[in-house]
Length: 119
Length: 111
Image (tube, rainbow over all chains, first blue to last red):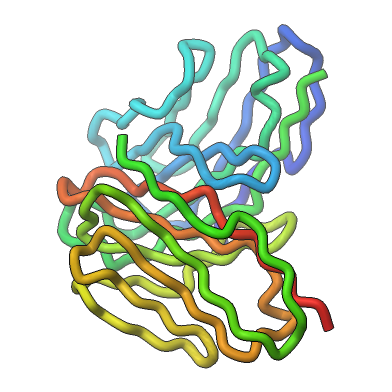
């Protein structure tokens, strides 16, 4: 497809289990972002990948969260030993231009998100 | 950490009414964007403002960037039910390495 694809769309897991969320960005987009959105709230930045540079992990809430981006394309967000407070919608976005290349006038293209529920 | 505060958090109005949503910060941003999000979908970009004092219009929507580039507003004229959604502002800092989102304004327009 032409847009950002995320899977699974819904994930229900038990507390303490590990989960993996996948993001397939728009082809050719060099930048990829993960955000977290609690019910009806704004977006909380998690991590940012730009090309082959080291990712900006400053938004990851704990060491239980990690993410990787293979081959500059698909990204996986992993949450280990899930807790109930991890329940949220995890949104992935991609962009053609990195933010810090110049004044940002580009556009983030978002996927539909992965809704995670931790029981 | 730069913070963006949006107000009001919730707004329920009748079709045809006008409304203004505000996005405020104590920090200066190099540019600012407004997105709209509908249930079950990701946010979609509405506009980007770059210059202090800039005003952009998108049909019935008018966006303004504050002179000091710390705040922005979104004004909707003659709101329609199709305007219902979550409106998010997002600021890009001067270092150009962080896109910070506000908490959002949830708008409901009743027919």
